[in-house]
Length: 128
Image (tube, rainbow, N blue to C red):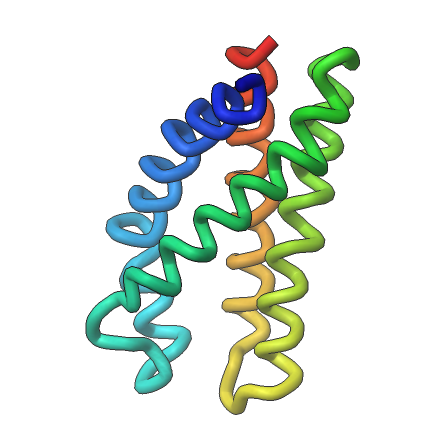
């Protein structure tokens, strides 16, 4: 039951933040950077599968290990998890997709750090 509570908190904080970024703040940036590589319509099945897995990762690898720790613990773990997961996506894309601009790599990795740190902290704070 504890996992489901944490998962719900993570979902309620992650989804609005990512939609704000992808749907409004960063939308034109991604279009400009990806050009014809960007889909006209979001593949929602792929997006939902990502969200389900990513949120489980935040809970298992960041929040649960930090529950008995301090805010500093969860913030550092969240930032590192965001960096590693988004770097995996961005650096592999940079390695195999032409063009996949360095500007996109850096901005998206930064977003991953911000998003994961924020969601991890909110989930940890309200889940304790």
